[in-house]
Length: 326
Image (cartoon, rainbow, N blue to C red):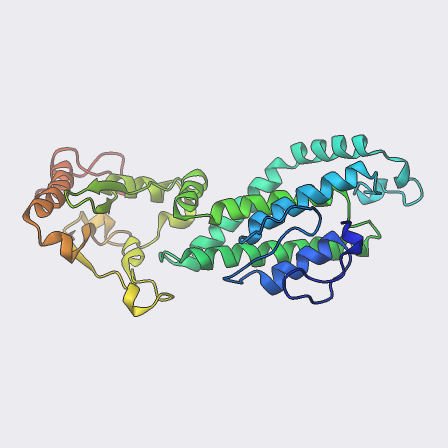
């Protein structure tokens, strides 16, 4: 079936715009958060049922793009506005469009990377140290990509440029893939933080009960703050405030216990910039009840304490390490 013959949504049977973008826009806005998403592809003869919106959109776009190429449909290339001519854009063949779209992607890779970085920074601000549920992250990604896509269509229409063109298609698709990749799960989000903000991933401590605990060495914490201007003067203890995710139900509350050392007798010259050095150990109370687990957890804390005595710590503004006696 051609997209031009598609008059109704394949899920709710509502009337939709007879264009690829109109159909996909309806799916995102109306069915983007459906827990029971369920539809087949209206462009092919397959009876396969898609239960994931992202997978369906990827299939639909590939199918529609291939069909359009075979039918030699008029996909005009969105050239820079000062070079665009409505009278001769039909003379550009498909191969030229695809080639120029590839050149555009290559030249604007840096801009796409900036969009990724901005999105990661936005997530960091929204999360405020909390771990958002996967469905919240995906909803945010879906809403943002839908907003950007609608904005690009509106802008192109105001410039009298055909919105159904190769560059617009590739650009929106690239943004969508990148944003969804970052929001896919916690590991992909942490990987993006490592790439853009020198984030040091907590070391996992494997307990005999096969429970995993997280630990960041105090020296790595110093390294994190020194590599980012916004984090340089950040009060790291704030990251531990409200470790319970407020968006989840009471039955999903993580009951964490904290054991910490606070060293506040620092050199007087640091009074205005650094009041104390904290060593914190976070763990589940149920794991701490086991004696073997306690030995493993405190061994890591003891290692940091010994490091402060033997290796010292270079405090902000100093060139030489300050040695602590515990």
